[in-house]
Amino acid sequence: MTFSVFNLVIHGYSVNRLIQEVLTRASLNQKTWIVTANPEILLHAKQDNHYWDTLRQADIRSVDGFGLQLVGWLKGKRAARVTGVKLADEVAKFCAKQGWSLALIGGQDGAADKSAWMLRKRHPELKIYAETGGIISIDGIADEAGGQAIARLEEYEPDVILVAFGHPKQEFWIQRYKDRFPTTKLFIGVGGTLDFWSGNLRRAPLWMQKLGLEWLFRLIIEPKRWPRILNAVIIFPIKALFSK
Image (cartoon, rainbow, N blue to C red; front, side, top):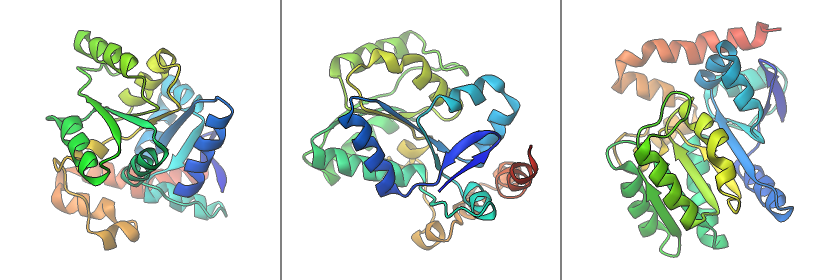
């Protein structure tokens, strides 16, 4: 299930395997940091040594993106694809069932608060806390408002923190601040998940999600994204397969 892309180990685990890995590590008093790796993230890491080294420090780099799953298949690995939204959905469900507390930070236009309300309706027993998180620099440094948000999160002592600043900010943020949360068991950078949960962004129909065609849906509703889609679906597989 594992394979290498740009000298980074990619874990093509199913969502159940990912959660089991978190549970196993938690039982050993070990934190887990999951990067939901996709072609954009990995292409960025290929060009930025600092970012590459940050991704390397994560415990798990899951497969989020059809282009990355395709590379795994072409390397002879049966890699499962778990989108950031799917993983976050399952983690929220798991937290509600396990009694773990969940914190959300990031998103746009009140997405964290809206997402928290949505999750409370879906899982009434879920212990959840939300922070906007202030303004984050490109290398993950929080401004004054962000620092105050971190301090409040420290007081809340969540078991899980979902960080939604987009890459590379969210990975740099986790690397920089995770040690301030000694009781937190799981950190995940979840990109635009809060914007989907809050309704700020539309998701692809379920049949397109299952076929790995979310990129096509995004292209249809946002034609200006075509250079990013081209990178993810065409350029990335070629570079990943022929990279030394």
